[in-house]
Image (cartoon, rainbow, N blue to C red):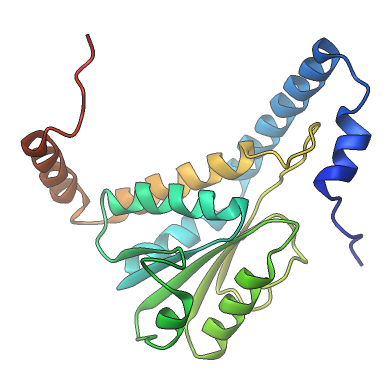
Length: 211
């Protein structure tokens, strides 16, 4: 059985407290370099991201779920996917509520749940209810025995080792970037949608040109 995930306070005491800024910076940089190399090797050797991308692109409606820090990851993935796909919805509790999603599951719908230790109860409960009602679940998590792994049709398991008090985002962001890229590359209408968005952005004058 896996031990209880360390809390930020425990990681602070173990990794950060009573260390000079120079020593701590070097430790974090070395750890992040090693973590990134591991993530690159993992992505090259495993097909989990390709499988997840295939499920996402074939779905009719895609819902992205995360809580706490994972909500930021879900929002990042949602922003990248929506650039080339329609039917991408972030379950943020405001614009899109979990209760509404659970009450309207249709054939072809897909929930992408991002759940990193320490695993938020809200994410687990909603994803469990979604799967129990016949919805398809893609899980992005950090351990093979994490909650929801048994319920997921497809799962992407990535590392978040850290030399800081906070779990490292390095491997997570890399995996999300790969997932969005492979999904959009597989979507037949992505090119047209991206061109239309560029045209609309210019008409609305959304961006500031560099000096």
